[in-house]
Amino acid sequence: MKNQFVNPGFLVNYIRPLTPWCGGIAILLVMIGLWFSFYNSPIDYQQGNAVRIMYVHVPSAWMSMGIYSFIAISSFFGLVYGHITAFSLAKAAAPIGATFTAICLISGSAWGKPMWGTWWVWDARLTSVLILFFFYIGYIVFSKSFNDFSKGEKFSSILAIIGLVNLPVIKFSVDYWNTLHQPASISKFGSPSIHIDMLIPLLIMFFAFIFIFIHLLMIRLQLELNNRRLNIKNMKSYGDLK
Image (cartoon, rainbow, N blue to C red; front, side):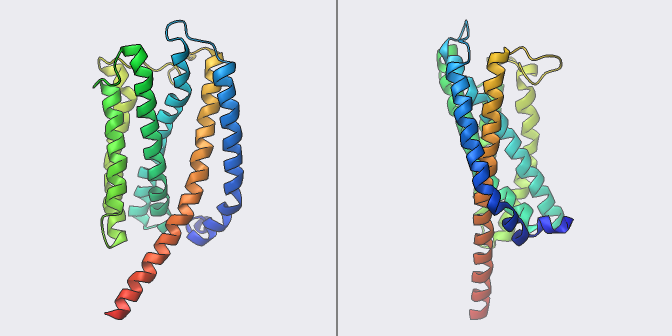
């Protein structure tokens, strides 16, 4: 039974009926999260209404790192065990993670302008997230740069694993370097310093983003597996012609 879940055909049949459900849950959570964010969340005494950008910026930042970890782990299993599903999951997740990282950077710039007086500063947190975005782009480019798609998967997987070293830099940059970015207020020992009325919409939006990711991943995984089958057929046809 455990081997069935790495079988592409079995996995597609398993996730296909779940795809619309995940999409529906994502839409519902986004609607609830936006309502809490705009109508049931207090205005910050220093930042005013600009603090509401947090409800998009922070969850997208969490997603950007979480999805990259997912890609690196899938790439590792693909390299070590040669699972087609692992490679396909990583390739399917990469554009989604790159999009969340772009949202994080754009929303962070929009939040930074009224707070810092500038759209961008080269501090440790912002720069390391930008590097993460470049790792995403590098992975996508490498995976599509070879006529032999298996070679592209191997090179892109190695790049993804190397990029893991950047995640601790992102996480601890506000603690160990002089940075304008505020320190962690949720993921720290003890009780979070963020008010509960702000924490609730933040977590709702985070779970909404998780279900958006799962929904899009399911769709893209099916496309990746179909593309793989087409590539294999084309390679066989080309071999027959030779």
